[in-house]
Image (cartoon, rainbow, N blue to C red; front, side, top):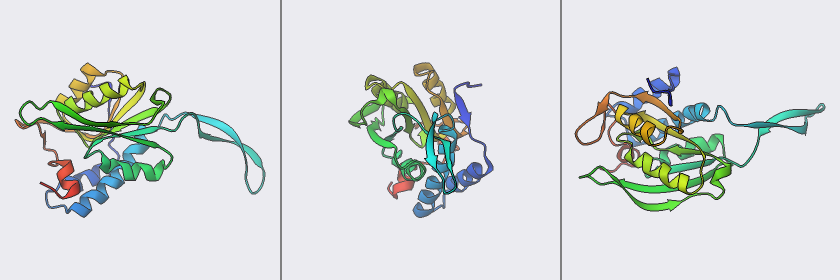
Amino acid sequence: MYDHLTVVDHPLVQHKLTLMREKDASTAKFRQLLREISQLLAYEVTFELELEDVDIETPLCTMKAPKLSGKKMALISILRAGNGFLDGILELIPGAKVGFVGLYRDPDTLKPVQYYFKVPDELQERLVIVVDPMLATGNSSVAAIDLLKTAGAKNIRFLCLLAAPEGVARMKEAHPDVPIITASLDERLNDHGYIVPGLGDAGDRMFGTK
């Protein structure tokens, strides 16, 4: 249905997502699960990283072995909920550069308003992975990617926990060149722009706020 969308249906991903959806999951449990699931999703989103052969010496002999090539990738968190992805992914890829895009959603228009933008240099030479747990209306994601493309990014992927059809369609319209990787394509948005069935507000659940 959506050629730019990948839903990761690995059993561990789906199991951990179910635990996160449960309304009684504690803040600590939610954070732990998000860190774990982010690592599993990172495996999928980095599957096509480029490699180069380098000469190394093992305890027994010298050999050519594959190693990541080019500039280190850039992780871009859409504040604040996107930060929940960072710890897990950085455990796998500790050399990744990290940037932040601050956007909040106007409660009346549901449109994004920018308040912060700080990203690594030379984005045009990096794989750029944008992270945000929820792809709801898609407005914030589109705005963030607009900013990143203006800053030079060319190879961009979007990683989220849940996506709504409305957000996927919005991204397809605005940025058809940006693949989306998610753990679930949920049913719809409600009248307040929340994903249904969803898991509530990811930022509030992660940080213990209301």
